[in-house]
Length: 159
Image 1 (cartoon, rainbow, N blue to C red):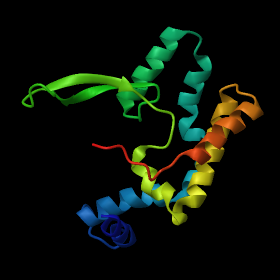
Image 2 (cartoon, rainbow, N blue to C red):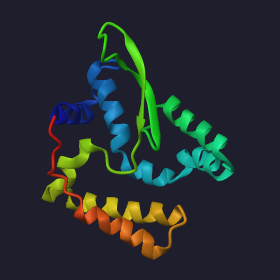
Image 3 (cartoon, rainbow, N blue to C red):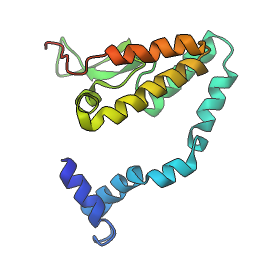
Image 4 (cartoon, one colour):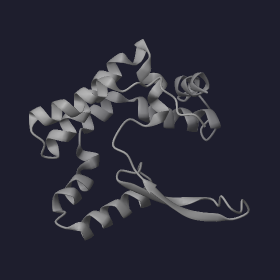
């Protein structure tokens, strides 16, 4: 899949307009244009950062989490959504669960190999920065970042 999407990105400019190659390739290239992403900086996130800055009570936090669920972001503190009902697979049920603050499990292989080592280091720096933004002292934030070093991405939970 990765090869097919990458090839679509390489061929998007010359593919017929509206074709699958052009559409998938343009979508892929939009995410791979790191120069444009870097140039944009935090500007695309500023409205959400402003919402966070305006929070003053639990009601604001609940509304913020609800909005995150509504726009389809990963569950930060908690998540809600429809899934096939475990008791009756012909209907859907709404489930809630805890969110996470960490690397999604889908990235464990990438972060666990030598090619992903630089990404793991970047992730550790991210954790430390977020903890400092959250009000932790630099020492406390460093301890949180250090815990990432003991994380074993090769560990699998039995299904």
